[in-house]
Image (cartoon, rainbow, N blue to C red; front, side):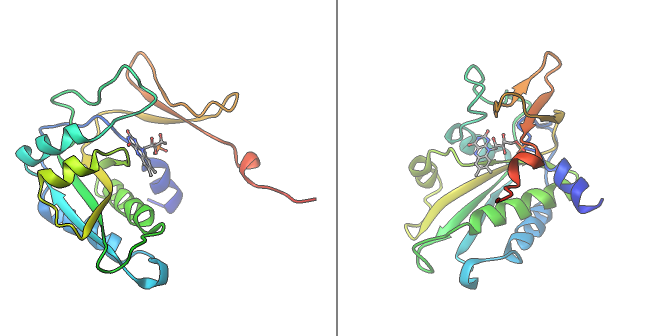
Length: 191
Ligand SMILES: Cc1cc2nc3c(=O)[nH]c(=O)nc-3n(C[C@H](O)[C@H](O)[C@H](O)COP(=O)(O)O)c2cc1C
């Protein structure tokens, strides 16, 4: 797969085959990609928790918000939920600020997931205090992002944006459509 194809395939998936279990080795290889990624001032202040057993996945699910534009959709039904999660933590004993490190790390993990035949969704809308309490995460760690992972069962299709409407939508066959702005709109040419 060339880089553009990898990026094109690395979409946000929110419905998965819940019977598909992800081996711990995969999680470790994904976190290794994050470990090798760029870090502001090379501080490397991020730490990771991963979960791939059914009980823990069930515990994490209610603390996450899914697809904010789908106001009628509470998130994936039982049978289509993620079978693994990575929680990206900021280690406050290393730094007070984490810059964009967690975004970069999250994307490395997402690209690695695609390359491994999986898919995921970066989740920023998290009940952080509740999730932290659930797993007794020590005080020096701040929950920054959660990445939901699994074997996707949905098609995600990139669309040209219309009328500047950034909202993704789902069609009657449950295909998920994601509008992207054009390259022309993004590149600013100063006069
Ligand atoms: C920093 C960040 C936070 C996100 N938080 C959520 C979230 O809380 N819930 C969710 O369902 N999707 C979340 N997403 C996924 C975005 O909605 C998704 O990236 C966007 O709709 C574009 O789709 P694409 O990733 O397939 O290009 C997040 C993505 C990023 C980068």
